[in-house]
Structure formats: C-alpha cells, structure tokens
Image (tube, rainbow, N blue to C red):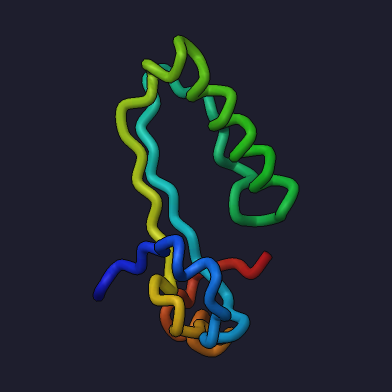
Amino acid sequence: EKEYVPSAADSKEAVSGGPTTAVVSIIIEIQGDTTKFDGAGFSIAGTKEVLSSIASDVIVSDGECTNAVEVFWTPSDKEEVLTKHDLLMDFPEIIDL
C-alpha cells in the first residue's frame, strides 16, 4: 500500500474521495508512564482523558522521556473511502465512538 503524503498543491485541490470514516492507531513508548488506559476506546470522554494524560506525560523533561511514537491510519489514500460496512468487516472488534 502506498502512503499518501499531501503536498502544497494537494491542499488546493478538491478532494474527490468523499466523506469517510478513519481508524487511527497510536503506539507510544514513554519512560515512567503513568497513563491509565481503562477508559480509552469506550467513550469519547474516556479517550480524550487518556490522550490528555499521554500529552502531559510526554512533556516531562522537555520530551526526553519519549522513546518512540508511531501513528497509523486508514484509509491512507485521499481517494479511498472507508464505509461503516468496511469498518465492521476489517475491524470487527472496534468500538464506534
């Protein structure tokens, strides 16, 4: 699969893929992390709380405590559209927020 990286010219063009659903995965390694992941993925409020906790953990020591971060998303192509049916087929255990 080819990764889509937008250029300056792309931002001026109209998107022809249409509205879509996106799935985003964040993998992060933090030294001394105290984040509680109990509420993540089950509600919007719980997910926001976990993301805020991660954000506060990574700014300690000017970010020196962050070892690695990877962000994955689908669909990656600007023309691709991920429907609710596609979402359930590809990610059967996902919780729709």
